[in-house]
Image (cartoon, rainbow, N blue to C red; front, top):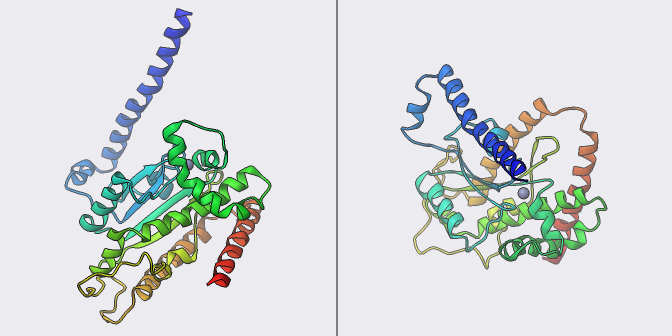
Length: 295
Ligand SMILES: [Zn+2]
């Protein structure tokens, strides 16, 4: 029994040591490519994106997007939740938007998400976890009629993950820091991503929630001072340009780039995945149509 315990301890230490060794290899490889790599990094960061992702170990933002340290400011929690009272998350958002001047916030969910799956299940997973999962349960409760149309459990989880991304995008638009960024002439865009763990590809979640002007008036803050003109590369300097127009210009450019990239890298043998995506997209479109009818 004692030997088993010692052996287990040795195995675990070996696993831990692998990470330390991995770091030494990483440093050596980087220095071989550029001897100044780390001294340049030490001068500061200028990330282009803030990514809110799931803590799941299969969803590492830098590896998935072939980006380097310094390019993505990252916050991760279970099931990529944008909880309005999360002090940690809100500090990250404020720093990213107001100090790092990040223009793009990405909410990235993923298929086979344990948090989403647990939220669909009524079995308790522990006090704090159950409390946190209520964020996802709320999304499930609103969308049960959509999710439960699917039979396969993995498809249901994928569908709810997608709907959860939409919900969290909407929550991010409700954030006063984000809304003030438009007022301050530094418009922030919010994007929804779904990582397909089974293929490695990221899909953009395109919904009406991506457009700031679709946010309900109840949540759209009015600021005392007049808005400053947007300082974006795409801005033509015309102060009359609406927030929605600026957003659309930036969004269209990004979507075009993303589609070009996807077209050049997409594996042609993805028929099954495509069918599943079409099925889920159809259900989501049904939801959008229903919302339109209710307006
Ligand atoms: Zn997850």
